Amino acid sequence: MFKNKPIRLLFLLLIIIVKQHQSNAQGLLKVSGKQIVNEKGRNIILRGVGLGGWMLQEGYMLQLSGLGMQHRIRAQMVELIGEDSTRTFYDTWLANHTRRIDIDSMKAWGFNSVRLPMHYNLYTLPVEQEPVAGKQTWLEKGFQMTDSLLAWCKANNMYLILDLHAAPGGQGNDNNISDRDPAKPSLWDSEANRLKTIALWKKLAERYTNEPFIGGYDILNEPNWGFADLVNDKNGLNEKGNEPLKQLMVDITKAIREVDTKHLIIIEGNGWGNNYNGILPPWDNNMVLSFHKYWNFNTQEAIQHILDTREKYNVPVWLGETGENSNVWFTEAVRLLEANNIGWAWWPLKKLGNNNPMQVLSNKDYDKVLAYWSKRGPQPSKAEAYNGLMQLAAATRLENTIIKRDVLDALFRQPFSRSTLPFKTHVIKNGAEVKAVDYDLGINGAAYQDTDTADYHISNGKRGGNRGRVYRNDGVDITTDPAALNSYIVNHTAAGEWLQYTLDVVQGGKYKVKLNYNANKENGRLSLYVNNSNTKKVTVPKGSDWQALEINDVELKKGANTLRIYIDSGEMDLRSLQFTTVK
Image (spheres, rainbow, N blue to C red):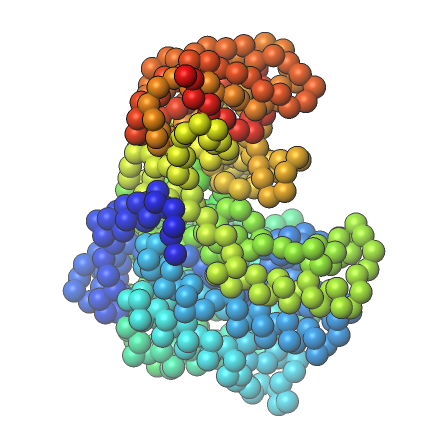
């Protein structure tokens, strides 16, 4: 699977790191004071990932910003390709998106748990479609999918956490999250929806009461509803009472405990999981508090509220959802969380996007669908639309995705190590070329230095990180190379930034290094360092297009070398380094 030697070495190191920090699943999880422990009483740090986009699609995961909710996406699909073809697409999507190979791979990468975002409509009918009002019709599709996923988790000694992501009617005003239709009664406006939610959890608990690899029941994902002031506080951020939310969670707990007294019950506050006003203290002795964390600083202060809550109520806490940021942010977050004995579940495993363990690729016909839906292009033919959508469903299969090694390294190795690894093997001999974007793997300040590394807009209003959002997920800015298909360049460099490359030199001696660059500003200067020695300082002339800057007499030893490009001043784009032996 891994033909590239540095990648093999990376995964060997990841296995070592994971063995040092991960306990295997050993029986039911339970609460012991402020800890989550297994049946042997051993503290367990959950390192998981959520299967977002499988049972429940959010528009942004498909690069759709306007459509948002899954029911709207489906309706638009029906208009393009018809009901039967749409049903075929969704059947294929569900079959392809998450399979045994995904869970096997997650285990190999270091994850010990899986969070399943469930859409209720795979398990039961919507209330308006029930043949008999007040009765619950159960659908085998969702239960069978969950059974299969559980079997794959058990085979890998991993915990499965069930998460009701889309409750009947929808649990919040952030409609995309729960596939809520604002034209219909919400979860909070309908007693029938409330009762169906409770009944669904009882049915799930009955089915899995004796399953030790069910890690817990995350009973309601990210409620966000302004009970006291729906007009001015629609997402419940300032809610003080939260009485309907607490009552529903108490009722769900009671229903679960009628059939299952063993499993963890995980609760989430209002305001996307963080507003616990009026909800605590816990009403069950095997309960965990979940919080969600996005786009803020990774400091002790940023999580102090949840640490104080944990201490006050002597209850474990778990970061049930986080991610959607840069590798720098990921490494900071894992380091912070695990230093405070908090487990985590990243979001999501895969999507059309760069900052997750797997990147799903688009195709030309799906791009036409996107353009039409976004009002940027004409309507594609039915054949084009169907082909594009079915190619997209096929693209979700693990073997068709891009495995983001840099994201995995940021989650599992970089929080605990300053060492660097080659991103790719760079064998240096006469005529060799190194792409500028293929700098080493490692933390900021070890493999590279960038001044704008992550999205902290909740804390400081700045959306940093890789501006191009392509190829890699570090702070380094990367964009598509306009001159070459499926190729990339480093851009928006700034003074003080640098990139490091590990070189495997076949023959030691002097080399001419030709830097392919584009600089449209004056006063550009850079330095070339080899093996931490100041080798060359050069001026980078301004130009209107790509050009070559020759750096002569660069001494390289046989074997492993490190080369760093330092940006001393100016801004420039970098494409590649070419090496020519000097006789």
